[in-house]
Image 1 (cartoon, rainbow, N blue to C red):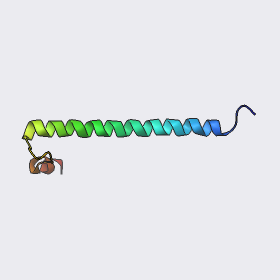
Image 2: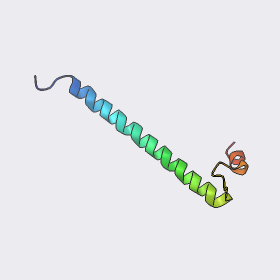
Image 3: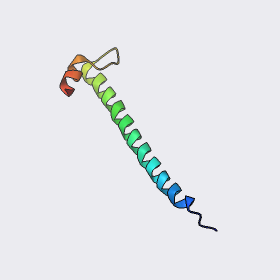
Image 4: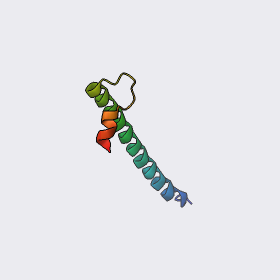
Length: 58
């Protein structure tokens, strides 16, 4: 019994995990970029989202 059935599902789980991590990383990157952009554009000293930027989003 070299090829036990668990190996196939493990590969699938690994792929799903990798995809999830990629999505999270991309999201974090976007958040950081947006934060830096907001700071540079609006000079928000508090570090929080300004009213102007919040209004632009929705």
